[in-house]
Length: 190
Image (cartoon, rainbow, N blue to C red; front, side, top):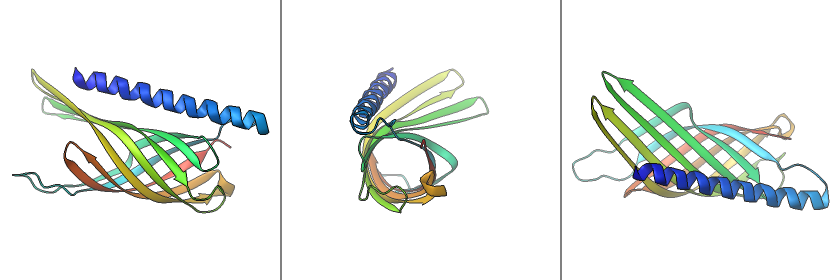
């Protein structure tokens, strides 16, 4: 039950941040040029290296393809975007099932406002990670809040309508630290 409350709070926070950023962007653009807010929709594949070695365990490497995470970012200014993201995995077989989720929000600061040129960015982020296990009549669930920071680059394609995106980040959740490499693509609404 605790993880459902945390998930609900995280969803509420993401919604408030995204709508606030969208409202600010829309107001500032309506004052200057009556343009709609710019949205960046995308998905990423990922490679994760566990850097923590708890007692009695081994390091793990996880490859997640083709689309373990989707994201929708709204631009708050020419160099700042607020980007909620969501990942969901479900595995079942032999009477057992596992459902995992990862929901969060990041803030991308781009070092250049030119979307038609390659852009370097930094992205601090906050996320809620959880899992629910069921085996026969036994159920268990858990969730934890995590933080991370990453740096990456966007390479524009098709006149700035699409972009390839690569990022390296480090994240920690529940005393576990991981190095993550993400590669994906983005579609811009205009």
